[in-house]
Length: 216
Image 1 (cartoon, one colour):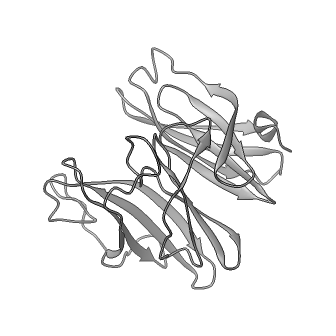
Image 2 (cartoon, rainbow, N blue to C red):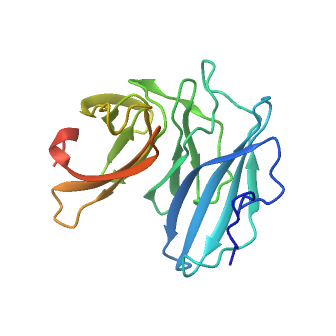
Image 3 (tube, one colour):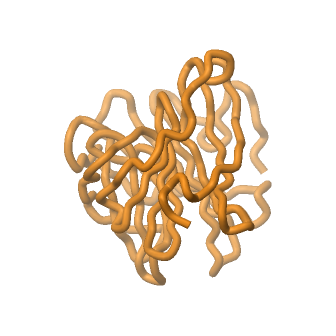
């Protein structure tokens, strides 16, 4: 188990100039393990890498493994291509990795571990740092920087913003918001929602109806 230290990254103790960010946690049902993917990014540009660490109990994690290097492959625009990677299963041999931000897009693979294809450009309404949940032909997106918005897509490439759900308050989210996450509520009618706030730093939680996405 990693020993957390205030001056040391538990994922990469040798971290220097690069950033480790944008974690994505996926349950591998076949192996009965948690797979934690995260992005390595160099501020100077030129390198973006996808790393993996796994756990069978959520406490003890494997030594991180480099899965793929992307060299800032952009679909379009000036954005980084691996921003907030969201890995979702569409079918047995059909996995998608949907990234957020200007110039981002969707990649395909036969397993959650890749290798991942070149990006297909994100079209329609875009956003920044979000998450994606897939169910019955619908990609549900949730994210944003200055607000948390609801997005819907039926192919993972063409997106429509359905609603502006949460706007920042002066008391709680005055510095912006970071990467919302949605998971289905057990009642089938709602989503459980988490998102980060900046200055002050919090993790916020609420429950929202699926009807805000125009589905369910």
